[in-house]
Image (cartoon, rainbow, N blue to C red; front, top):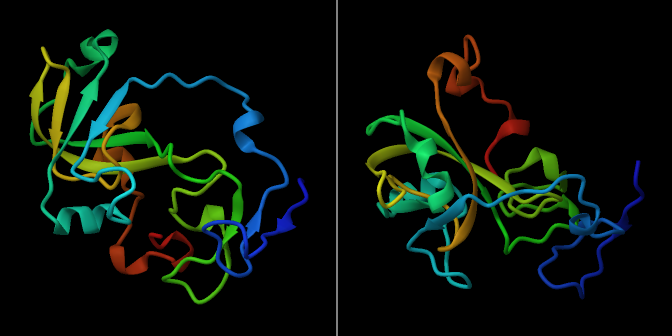
Length: 181
């Protein structure tokens, strides 16, 4: 287990009590990642961006997933109106915060108990509705997204209720540890 150090208040963007790692996770890479495209959203980097997909949907702001031409053949078999799991790299996020103080929580929590983009590997995911496909342009029009315009795209997977919904799951049973954040 790696030792951690308490964050100093002077470190930009940290809240009292938050803890940062004593190393840079970006320099401890175990694998390479290929960005397969970019996400086009209405949220310019440095401006306001929804903190989650629910907020993005409330703004009724569609988005577009753009695939690099080398990966466009992978769109074959997707269908409009279905749902997708979009995985993306939150490249503007800090990677060294391991204990956070979310604004919506009354206590410090470990990074793996929240959905904040600040994490050792800033991978984000969204389950979105696919409105339209343009295979020639390599674009997917989706209902919403909670990332800055130009965010790197990691992967796209079909969302399947028969696989992705745990047996017997009911929204009212969602545990606090899995609450969005």
